[in-house]
Amino acid sequence: MKTPDNLPDNLPGRFHGFDSPASLSQALAQHISRELADASAERRASLAVSGGRTPIQLFEQLSPLPLSWQQIDITLIDERCVPADHNDSNAGLVQRHLLQQHAQQARFLPLYQQEESTEALNQRLSQLHWPLDVAILGMGNDGHTASLFPAAAELEAGLDPTQSQFCLSLTPPSAPHRRLTLSRRAISASKTLILHLQGDDKLATLEQALAGDDIRAMPIRAFLALPQLHIYWCP
Image (cartoon, rainbow, N blue to C red; front, top):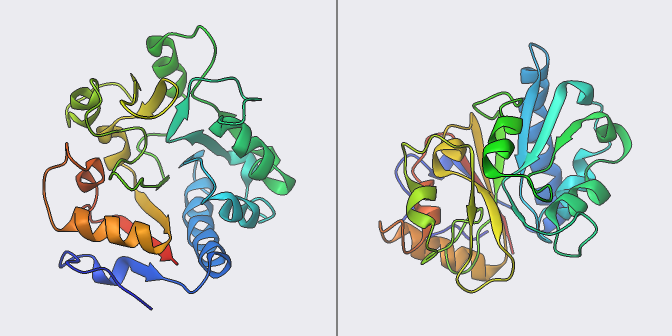
């Protein structure tokens, strides 16, 4: 199994490589379920997930697990500002693939609600347990994660480690739809942080990110040295 070049000294034991998406999803679902079970035994637990095609198998592994879902809150790492029935909606993806079977008992806090201000959104997100118990990131081939896109006008605010808002509005320079994204500060505070990757192209992007330190050029770099980060990858 391949491993990336230039792994930080504190990361090799937390890079988890698998032969297939199915084996990765099964192992990652068990990892997440352990963290949520521990947290939900004491209070409401919080889970933030990403959208796209990569996590669909993971969602379908999580949804039938017999957790105390009624004690678990789920939100999104980021979202396109489109209705939930739009093909590009992460909320719609979560509803179809994660909020099923046992997991339908979870409370879901979507990011996008039409005509809601970012101030009202942040107030609504304050219902969650912060810091998040588990946050699952993806990564684009340009090194963006969440909706923290290189060259976005609002990137500086999103990456500001003193940012007081949980979530900000951002317009990607080369992707459709205005976005809502959790801030670097909100993500970085997560108790368990997962970077979920699939494909040799993503491994190459990860190696490129590990080889440099300019977080504005590749925002994923803001998270790679965090001690609570685990990277799950398969071809």
